[in-house]
Image (cartoon, rainbow, N blue to C red; front, top):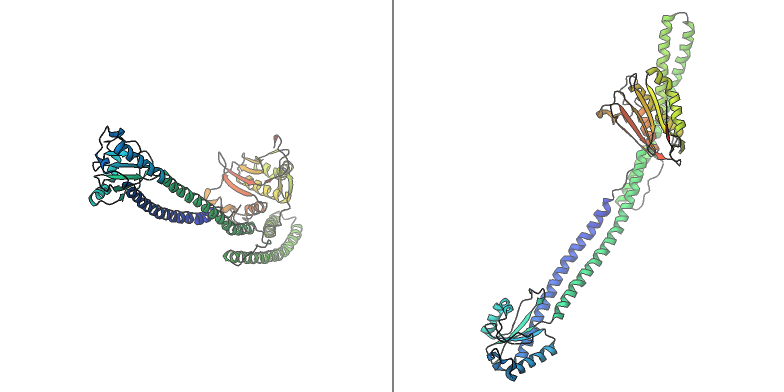
Amino acid sequence: MIRAPRRIWFKLALAYVLPTALLFGALSWLGYRAAATELEAELGRRLEGLALAASVHVPESITRVVPGDEQAEFPFVVTRARLEAVRARTGAARLFIFTPDFTARCDTAGAAIGTRLAQLEVDRHELTRLFAGRVAVSSTLFRGSDGAWHKVGYAPLPDGDGAIGVEAPAGYFARLDALVGALRLAGLVIVGLALLIALAVAALIARPIERLAAAAERIGRGDLTAIVPVRGRDEIGVLARTLDEMREALRQRSERLEMMLAGIAHEVRNPLGGIKLFAGILREDLSADAERLSHVTRIEREVGRLDAVVGDFLDYARRPAPALAPVELAPLFAEVAELLGPDAAVAGVTLVTTTADAACVNADAGQLRRVLLNLAKNALEATPAGGRVELCAGPGPRLTVSDNGRGIPEAERERVFTPFFTTREKGTGLGLAFVREIVLDHGGAVTLAEASGGGTVVTVELTAGPSSPAPEHAAQ
């Protein structure tokens, strides 16, 4: 069965979703970077301002405290209380005072006096500029070993040899994470909408293609009466109209061919009837002359063969549509075996049928009988004396005709179904072509392969009928 390729759905979805996702991702990344850079710069300015504002409340002597001064009311306890008050009012994460050698003098996070603040090494470049130019600076945004983001604003103490640092609150970084989450959610929504739009567009394109594929399948089976549905004026509509015009042209050509073949058959059969008549009269006149009577016999045999060829031509050209109905295979196989039994006996070939009592298929009984007769007759002709031909039903709606004859070369297996191709000296080349056309009209398939042990096996796939399988038996 021909089907419109489902890959078009995937391709169209990919054509819509991938560029949308890439474009949104690129724009989101650029937007995020621009927003994060601006927010980081703004935070740096605020932290520097806080550091400058806090520095005016710090006594000059705080930079001269030494370990052990933690209990001194002034300047350590007073300075720490002021820093805590600033931290509480501003929401800063931490305020600390340090000297140019990066040792702590007062820290709201609890670092002891004289403790070396190793994290300041990251901002050495900025701090060098701070102590050299006595200007406020801020660190770059970085992720520490604790996995958290850090940013600090620094300002020099106005009357002392030190500086104060103000660390950004954690809430700022939470807002950055929220921004990233919002962008991701928006991206999923946009990609989902793009996917829905892509599927809708794919449906609008793929469904007409599927209808055209079904129409092409019907035309390929020989059904030239069903009109190809034409919708729209786009390229698919043009293709549908062209396909329907081709169907109509093929239908008219087929009708003309049938009329021509019928006319030829009529014109040939009229003189054939005369030849048969005069051959019969001649047989009566020469009944006493055995030698000349043998010539009459040859004439009658060749006329009969020519009449059969004309009949094959007419049957092939005027093949009616199958009238499908449940057909029991056991009686049909028995009938075929009975019709071909004398031929099998003359050829010295064993003809065997194997089927189930209730095996049933949907088919035209007359046409299916012709299929089996053609296949079995070919198998008998290809099998030498002492050989075996078997007609078998199953499993399912599958019919096989196999023999252990000379077989068919692989190069000729597809050509044997072509009209007028034959390997026999007096064959018409229409038998297997007729078989294939009948099976295709039934919506089935016929294949030819080499049988195990030599010979040929022809398989016919049909549609199962309503009957259920029963135990098998063999008839000979």
